[in-house]
Length: 325
Length: 263
Picture 1 (tube, chains in turn red, green):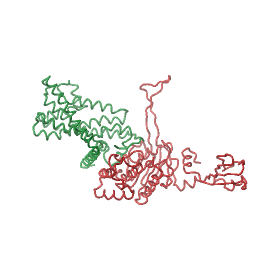
Picture 2 (picture 1 turned 135 degrees about the vertical axis):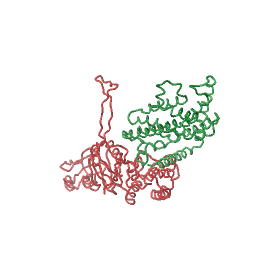
Picture 3 (picture 1 turned 180 degrees about the horizontal axis):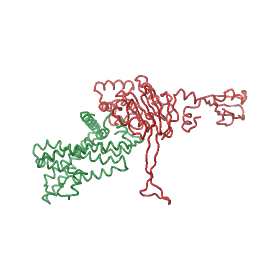
Picture 4 (picture 1 turned 135 degrees about the horizontal axis):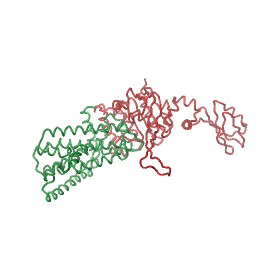
């Protein structure tokens, strides 16, 4: 069952810029309308229980899309259905069914403790007192926050705070969770813990996860499907498995030879770096083989060799730049 | 969302806001005391003025004090219960409305209730200080409660209606601030001192007279059922106008990506 259905979604931002006179000065009142297509005719669907990474470079339109899906922004055109609701017309009904965590915007009051915040969120979501207490107990155990649940939020570390933010957004048992860069600013250990918890929410509670992040590690570990958006358009919509299979066909071979030799480039073999006897070579496995590469120099000259896949981060960077072929 | 749920939300927020402020007890009491003291200075000012003149527009010291008490009470109610309305400009310009929009409550009510100006509690106490001072009838002490609630609702609704311009233009709050300033300044005088055009303005676009004069005159001094009913209708109309203006503005909301937390 689809929980998100998006058809030909568009969002324009209109700005009025003062017109420049021929002498370089600006007119006082004359304005020119400028239209920026933040999201330009995108369509996609998300199934129940999926973990989707919605990624793209800065200004690509990912946050704008998330904001339209959660009812924060009104779309300029197109259709959106989230859990059967139109977010801009049925925002209140939808809010009971979804949760959102914005890494850049906190919803907790910093002078109060997470527990006091949770109690308040219970009244925002009209949760009965006994149910709320049970839910706080359950989530505080899963997220291991009991130790600091009664300290003021302002005294918590960023990692602890984000955990509490997630608990607050799960109190009303949402069917979907939107994460907009939740790991921003976290250290590697806190990131790892958070990723595990998000996977756990998806697995144990069956919550659909819609995730944006600039951290490839987040995407690789948490998500099974990736949508890449750039300049307001979807440039890739594939499973993480396929992405790796199709785009990880390039191997990076680091070779250390006993002497300096001239390695001839050919179709599928590209020398990325050559310094003294050290070579970094990219091999496209769709066009050639490692054996072919080995034939370009004598194995007797070989001191050391290591073969690795192109990091997913580089692949995504290439897709952002439009070099996905 | 039902009326009961709205009241529940208002009081949940009020409890939360007081709890937040209560963490800093000396500051909590200091703010209330300072506001009462500040208001008391105005009594001295009015006392000096009425030693120089007999009346202002037909109103003597006691009547003017009643206007002043209603204005302080209305201001107090609006800032104590709906103090978040005065943060609308920052919330809109800095894209902080996102958090409120993802919650299942009316956005304006949610924003307006999200902050309390503790000093405004001092204004509410001050209303009773004035009533004692002017030796008010016993029932005025009860009637003043709905009166300052209505005054508070008009005050916050007028501000919200004009500050909703922030969704359309930069510095849209400047208009709201001017209107608020005019309402405050004009609130202490009866209509007799103004000419026809200004009176018209203060009964309609900037409803100062419904904020203080009509309640003072027709709830207390010369009770009149029709004017009481008109006051209720005008209050409801301004509240509706505030909700409609804000809702229309929401369609123009552009959000933003500034980082920040809730204090």
